[in-house]
Length: 446
Image 1 (tube, rainbow, N blue to C red):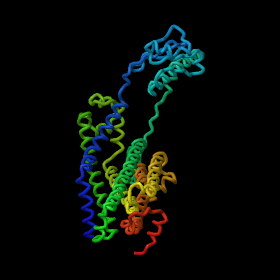
Image 2 (tube, rainbow, N blue to C red; image 1 turned 60 degrees about the horizontal axis):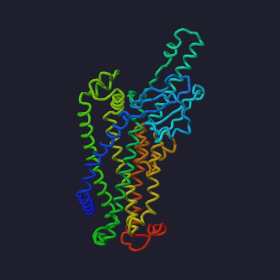
Image 3 (tube, rainbow, N blue to C red; image 1 turned 30 degrees about the vertical axis):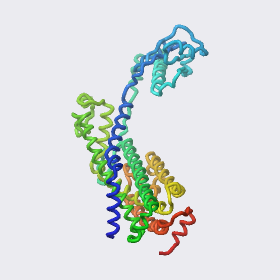
Image 4 (tube, one colour; image 1 turned 60 degrees about the vertical axis):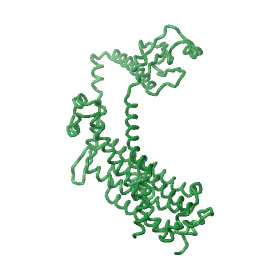
């Protein structure tokens, strides 16, 4: 046991001292925060590009289009043939030209000709404005034919916004606010993190084994340490590096979130916001609009500290369990080959399983109770990703316990199995190993 601890200490200290560890640990959360901030800025900013679109209006609509952000419309008195549109756009300073046909009231389709691809947002705005104008004219005609006074006001009054609130019922009979959107996002993000972490750290184990095997360091090590002890120590050592890195990311993430609130939402009272029915006052006291406040309010209502603690505990378990399972197999692959190129034939099946697990995790967002998702959350090779996606939706305790027990049992079994391959392959050089050869190694008796 002491030898295993020595190997764990060696693996941990060697990797932590590398400059790449410090760079990745410190800058990855900062880069993610900057990327998220940039993404939100891009999504929330208005379109500032100045454009002028020429309009040939052959319909009965007076002004089908109004100004859209910085995009203006110039209605032409002349009729430009469609064959001359390209030449017309070259000679004039127009971004695009569109023709509104005479039959647009019955066949609402218009062409937009431009020398560059029209942005999706502008295209949707054009469709929305034209639709509103057509509907307005048609509604006026219906009201005129009906000869019912104040019919438009009565029709407008029939529009009823519907709010669907999702409430979770606990075992004690209490209820709490829930959010399907936030639950889906939390589950999917956690599943993706597990996927990347497991693949990244398990691959490090394989690369480390190949490197030590190539440099013949392993020949010295196995003279004093059993191959299985070396395998176990390497797996646990890399796992310790991953856990330390993950815990640092949690701390840095918390600091970034606190700094973000202090800079952009200094006057925001989350407790008061949680129970607020009117967000106008909060919008006036903060630097964000009501739509963003509504998202924050849903987060505050949905996520409680107890849920966060339970979810983080589940995340750590499936991170460690999934890593240990795949790391034992990747270590066996590293012992069986002489270079990373030869490892592809053995890595491909494991990579496909991980990718399939991620896709099933996406499917779990739509139907967390489906048979495929249920069984995938129990099968050890896919459960670290799929079960993490399912947990925020509410999973019975027996399913989680069964999934965890199967994952632990599978890790022990495959570590033992990988140890048999590792014991033979670690000192094997110059021979290209096949699946048939691996099967023979498994049948060797100690």
